[in-house]
Length: 340
Length: 158
Image (cartoon, rainbow over all chains, first blue to last red; front, side, top):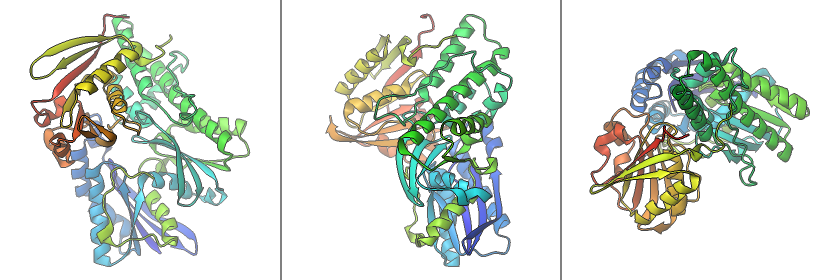
């Protein structure tokens, strides 16, 4: 079975072709036309610009991915995300499904991010129950996964997503968009202990697995303001501010994950989402897990599968296809606020 | 260097402007902000629009969270920056407010863009309280009757 995956929930127009034969998945192609250059100019994703560019690029991207192959199933991100961007992918998926008379599988973007862990050789080692940490520009969530397709959200951000905090802090510091890589690059050589930013660990019993990054962002803002008032703000401080900020985010993500691992006695931990591209996060969660929960297996997607891509959408669909979760094109709609 | 324990424990100046009056309030703490949100809610009706201006980190989203909680919204109100607009039901509809529409125009370039996501329908709805962050970016969509609240950190106070 050949699955065409389509992803257009934010600023990436992406498509992928995945072949599943006798339970074995082979990724034939996976491409995206990154729009980051366009959005960097505006310091963030501009929805109308994103949607218009999806319209321009989606057909060439799909053509490139398919070549002469006609797929058996189409998988498309139906939500959550920017409605204007999502509708481009959904409309194309509906049209192709009608033309080729093949089923459609709507995929939740968050589910796609966690299935990025099945795009690699080690996925056969994943055991349930698994704890999933999704961290991206729009989401910061902890999810318990008891089996394929069975999820229970146990925590989420109460205000800003972690990736959003990176973007906004980058803006405060005059660094480019996207904020994550810009801050990580600037943090190299910086002293992460120079500034003691707050870690919102939220110890209330119904907030144990929730996150909050808005206060951290505001703390950076105050620091910059105070340093400017004292005429002590120089570019030389930027590596220290960035390193201290990134460390604060990573500390919270790692400690919340560990807290959930201990409470729920999971067998695997799966990461996903654009912020997982952070070298600091990857290194520290590995270290802490090996030290504090060596019996639990940790899975981190390859860098290219952390940021938005369509391969993860196709591989998530391959599990839904087993359960015959396909729907006719008439029934597919954009689900901007879709909760997993 | 140690940073403040709670970001809202820094003094803020809030300026409220409706069609008739302009008021200036100084808020010294989180509880001041809560009190202010509760006061606001008393005077709000379905169909009202709050335009919240102020820089990153000045307290717009926090204020919106407090207004929503005061109205009895159960879900946690999170930043709408990524998806632009979020809706929250008010279970025990208070003052004719059945839902809160939280719009963030931070990433929008023009009023027309707010229209493409259907923002105008909520702004015009008599059962909805609409809260717009970064209203300057969509000025044409903000009705004349809107109450403008601007948030600023007090730079002189330490």
